[in-house]
Image (cartoon, rainbow, N blue to C red; front, top):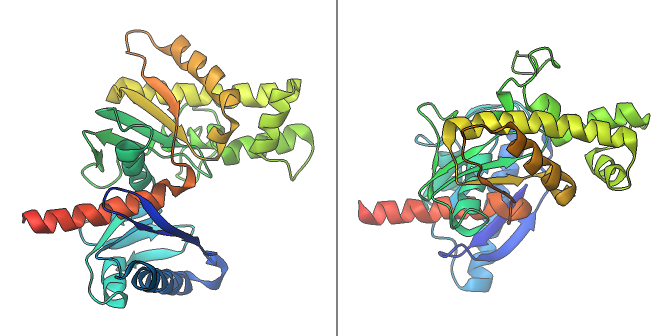
Length: 297
């Protein structure tokens, strides 16, 4: 888990990391978050003369931002965790904002990262899974029920692999960093090989790696064209571990998307600018937004 002290303008003042420790159980993870936040607050007091005036926390899974509850996170074993209440209590009553991790990262990319000049953008990080954040005029659209942007569960190959969501051929089963790692481990015969290894092999011209990579890029382009057909973004921001391959990913991806579009307007396809600090910065922006909302109210 990553944490930061963030200035009102989005400046990263201090950053720290700790192991999540999922193996210790759901309650232990919550306690680690609370302790981490308390230590960060104390760091602010010691080094900046005051503790944080608000807090933001970004978590995976299903989030009820309005009530401040982490509804469900499969990887953490959470159900209905009242994080806003718990964190506010630990931090002496400061206001607390809760957000979904990808949408929070998208907020940061939209305001101070790769989408800062775009009135409409789609942020898609390619990691363990694939999700999306829909940016509209400086805000992130969460949807009526908080599920907007789940592009990873758009079916692009109906006869494809089974997905944990119950469908087959979802985008994230074919084009996430995890999917590429699995495919390259099988193709290379090395069970420890991952997506980064595949990208290196692609860059060196390995034919087997090229086939794995082309399959993933083709599936990704199919999912992205579906998204841009629905959303018409001006900028498409690609992040996450797979984007670290740079032009090894972006050159064929831009070509595959352009090949698929017909009447749609082609968006700018750019790499994310903030890396894995996007979530921290976005959580800080959520906290500042919370304060400005309270002042205006």
